[in-house]
Image 1: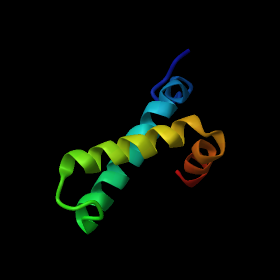
Image 2 (image 1 turned 60 degrees about the vertical axis):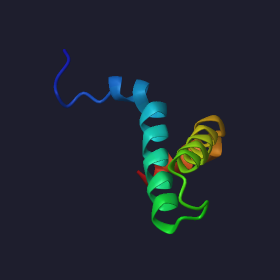
Image 3 (image 1 turned 90 degrees about the horizontal axis):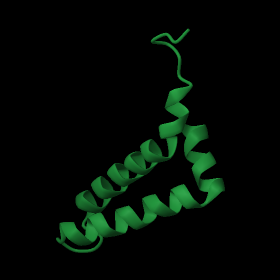
Image 4 (image 1 turned 120 degrees about the horizontal axis):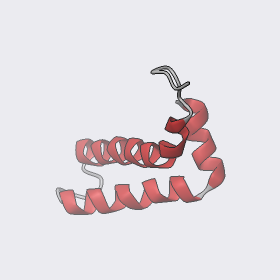
Length: 68
């Protein structure tokens, strides 16, 4: 029987949640410290590339899962 505390289906969405988490953290970092200048599109692009790398590379994905 499924309950509210059942987290089994949540594991299906883990890659998406990791991508969103990494994207938000990196975008905020780039926005705060203006590493790439004052271009929010470039900040979003670089954050999306790094977030995708965190999903595709298994040790990085496991690192985020261990931290969170």
